[in-house]
Image (cartoon, rainbow, N blue to C red; front, top):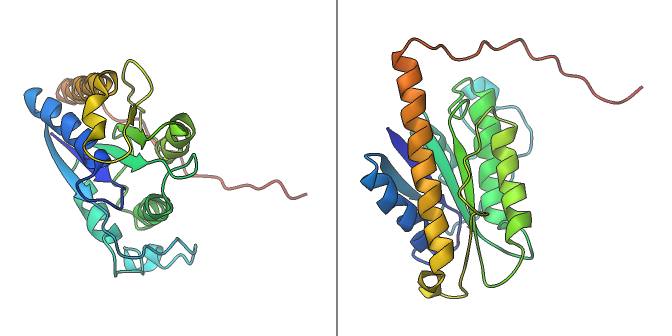
Length: 211
């Protein structure tokens, strides 16, 4: 079993990385493999809703790491997204990244996220973390992904690396999160081995509110 840890910070080895690395170490202790995937510093275009992904099987924009991430998620069992807090929200880069990844993953027919547990981690100097967590968790809840929690909101605090290492309670909660993720994955695997099948999917009926 493997969990993808998505680093949405502009700083490859900053506080977000250190937070995800704490999760990675705990997952390893639980026998779960992980990979920290850095979205990079290049410009990430937002989804245009062009629908090309449903025809070519991937996002039409191919100059960043979105398609690479979606391909990797096919063989992963869970996802944890980490982002610093910018103006009480996730970074513009990670939201553009996730918007295209989730939309193209669904429209391409690969369906790499359905029924895989997800969690988010927000890193801030001071405030805006819970708003960021609410924002990131919506990607999971619209994609049939069970949301995994810790014993507190998944927030850690620090302005510049490695200040996050001083937030002992925050890091402890990330270890709770990692163990809960590992527990859920093991329960899911046990259910699969016992012959419990995934829920059926109905054909989606799209409606709007225009009369």
